[in-house]
Image (cartoon, rainbow, N blue to C red; front, top):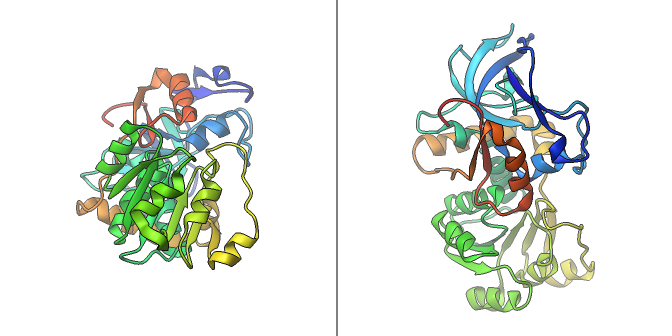
Length: 327
């Protein structure tokens, strides 16, 4: 089988495609024939050793895939060979990948492999952040920063399903139009200058109730300052670069909260609830209430451009590496 591997994490150009032995399903695991692999900003950071959790070497990028069950290890009883699935795997830039059986779920007929490969992390992050961490209520106003990215677009869709009024923040007219297609009620530019005035024009003096922020860049403090009484600012990630700070008096003056959202630890510490969220989200896909967008797709041989594109922040939705077959 073909697999993309790097022995060092100095540069994306260190990655090469090799022929590798096919993996064998161990007890409690399955082997997935990968059709599509999601390539997010975090995947690109990990591939360069720049993420907070560094991978062991040699490294095969990619964590989320859509594909078919190839083989099944002992003790996995809920799957059959040939099932269409989404999975968390050990290296998704590979024609075959091992996944813990517990992480593998069958996908609805209407869900493509590309959608499956961009779903789990982004949509569980959005639902966990908005429901558990922000306690978003129907009729509240939600501001989504970085709204055209994978997790930002998921937050728009989930926010609407939870009954919120959504204001999307994105850097270009194309990204703002994309955010509106995802369901945003309004879309505004992301320039820091005049940001609070643009928010005030849409929210009035009361300000928004929740800010969903996977960027935490130049808008971090202006967005927090824009919150209304008892507002909640969700810290989801740091795609904006250096980690910002906030004067400690601001939460006090606004009666507002700065709240962290870490989906990795959510799955670790609240596995049952996280699994329930994922099942609920897949049910929304199955009944047509939720249709995840597909970002730019790259052929398997274009793994370097795919990582570079994911790192650039230019995309709309989550970037997809097409490994085999229909995606």
